[in-house]
Length: 400
Ligand code: TRP
Image 1 (cartoon, helix red, strand yellow):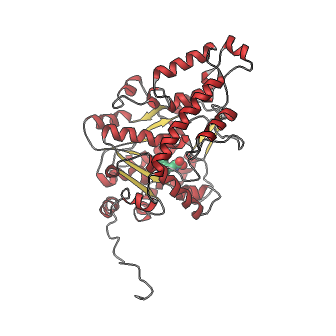
Image 2: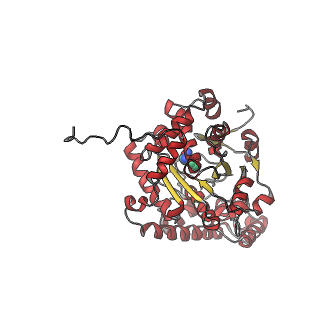
Image 3: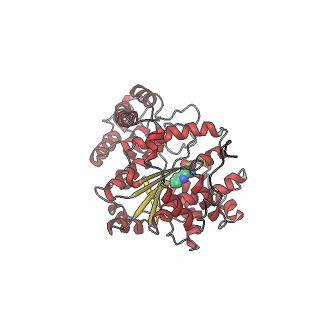
């Protein structure tokens, strides 16, 4: 990374004031054009219209596949390192919108191995988060016919042979150049695991267009995977990407590595917690006194309550524009904006929690979303591994 940059963005470190456009130059991705934005299916989506998803790779090829009625898929995953907050669930609701509009297949990998390698937590602890996170993901309401959920350690019979095949295509120096020298050999290998996630839909369903909607820090994984796909050994398209900015933390935009004293809004927060967190902690773009605010107006661009509404929680473009106008003019007060954002977030969470509570135990709910035996076999065969039964069943103590 050039020495002039005062920010760092890799899958394992996000620091400083991020210049999102400069990042695209570094990464070599393209800003979404107005035409591309307009080509998103159905009524479009506020995340695209308002530039939260702001860049991509091969987005046109994916959109074409959706309109031509060809098989197409989305891969969006979760690193289960803790309870999910509102920023974490947004890509899943976006994937659900695409699935509803176009019948997209949605593959959802959970990289428990990655988070184990990265964090100071046991596999059992990570497993606990994995179960909780799966329930939140299921609450989004994906179509089981068209959705697969994969857990790296639990689906190792398919993930591992694929990852081994792809790891063979990536040199250590590529990994070091892309991620900075990883802390341990597990994290050096992990990019091959995420490549397996991103190519899995094509290995199961045959060559087709895949789109990966992710925060821009995950783009290195996509790049590594695209290089693997480009070698043409496995008859797959390079997966496309749709890259998003980060939802600001309550501490304010551009303050991603949120300090410990700024809480996040969790998916499990009740109305009171949401209102308290936003009232107490949401950074305000308003003036310090009522008179100054009425006279000079507030700054929506740095106001976290406004950003929450703008990013996701206010559906109507007209309303968002009206709020920005009134805030800038000083007629809308910071406190009023906070109440509105809190209301919208609380309503959203109440609906989400309602759907989550109506689910049964995670084992039985997950069943219909897991890869079938036939799908596992197909994927393994595509990397040249078909004889997985060659050693037969594991012996029980009596059989031995
Ligand atoms: N690495 C991602 C994270 O840390 C999680 C993830 C795993 C993912 N596989 C994925 C995201 C595939 C998108 C697509 O959050």
